Image 1: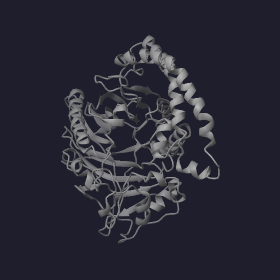
Image 2: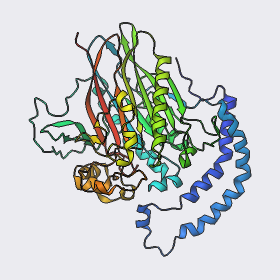
Image 3: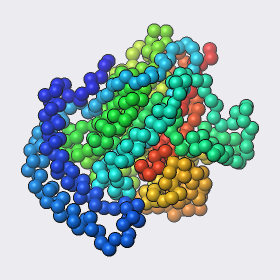
Image 4: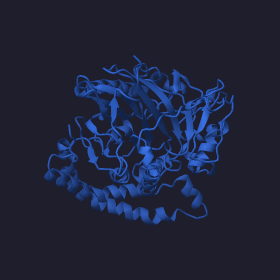
Length: 503
């Protein structure tokens, strides 16, 4: 199956859609600029000597006037844009030819490692990003694209070939250091986190992204301009990109979707099939975006004439803390859609190398307020490398949600500083979001317990029976600080090592 790049069947419909967007843009821009008058904590520090909010007083009335004057044009654009949503496939696909390709995997033979990264990048329009203490979307998307590809641009030609995996943690060549944390002056070398039993687990806090990430799953790429720019920045390194995912307008329901799903997926391996579903139960402000599930099938190689494939499922669940049942229902729907997708696209004899479910779940495994989600059936179908059971994570796991009011503090202002700060429990207590009660308020009972913070970003995986049995090993799990100053989330990375099972 070859995916069509354009979300429309012909250029005429694509042109009409673009015209509708152009007509809507003046009102969109004016409303965004009005909301952007709100200051981030960094801007407040810079402007604290000013006697009055001069920018708001001068530009606010002008922007309001522009918004009112552009309304008739926007209404015309809306009448054109809304019905075209029914003719639009709910994602755009970009295929490029990069300078180097990943080597196809052949079985029976040696094992192979695959690297996954998931990150919430908070690329909303500037005015809405200010509610998360972020702004300057154009500058942030450029920095995010640069940081996501830093390791790729400097990678040597050898890095594109399959290398024998490194065993993370305690190895034959590295003596066990009981209760200590290895420190390295080079920020590109990850620091391993003790597992509390004299060794080091597969977890690490890492400043850079892993080199040669095979699959990149992003959330909150809500702004279409940001999605197009990210696609441009990443396409030299990822041959297959699925972006602008989701259906706006009135997709089979009575709630107007102003934003897409925010999902964005980049792959080094060929995308054979892709499918998106919108969650029907969003409420409040979350109902304005088409949050849902993106499922993708990729081809990894061949095994005795049969395909070796992998499945990736990327999602972003409902945000308001009090709506635990909505998140549970969305996870249940997601599992159902995943099964339908895999049943429809798995061919007889396929070797399924991996099945990954990742994204921003908006609940953690340490808060008493998230108890309902912590016992969801997804954790019996998929494995969470960081989890022991409900309300219990492995000792090396830490939170991924930052305290958004503190993201511009000097101690967390760069990836290296954020990494060093989070290696200490005092730093985690100050700069990671604290556990919550069911109503979203801080949980006072967590103050005296060891601090891990809210881990709401997940990469889960599961194995499938196949004609050629494969064993799956978690080689490394990374908490990545490279997006410091660009997002209120840390990225997470998972490296899976797959080997043919011994007969």
